[in-house]
Length: 232
Image (cartoon, rainbow, N blue to C red; front, side, top):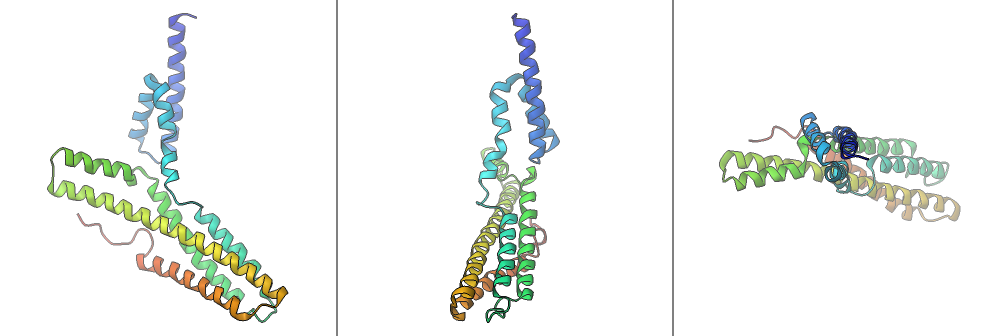
């Protein structure tokens, strides 16, 4: 095979990698210009740049808390329905009625929806924490100060606050799912073993405390996008 043939094959491989990199960048929410630049770099440098560009989103994904809010919400829903079924027609029915379970499910759905909204927002290139931090460092290195630096710092802090809210919601939903599953198990045990109402009541009280905490957090912030205007 001649050098010309090798060059053609190298170019074709670079073009194929460029297409893959562009699509992956757009799927991650990168701006069109940024995705195009990354793809253009891939044509001559594909053996080096393609692996970096194609795995760039994995680090961001690993920063998210373990578990998925949607999965946690589904766990809560399933455990609640089994718990309601277990205590139906028993002395525990007043502790977890169908109406109470429906209210818990509604609050969990609100929290899961807010988490999904925040997560989608933070996937966008304009909410990239690393890029915001790099911008702050760039301004500081350039010696600029005053309003430009303050604005860059504010942007970075806003992103960090949004990430903290998203992560807090995910942890709260996971913990609530574990607690509701424990409640379900306790109700089944109480039904067949005749456990005391006090033992079940303690878990129910804890579940309600967690649910009210979720609702209070959502109401306090008014959802993901209504914390008021950002100061500049």
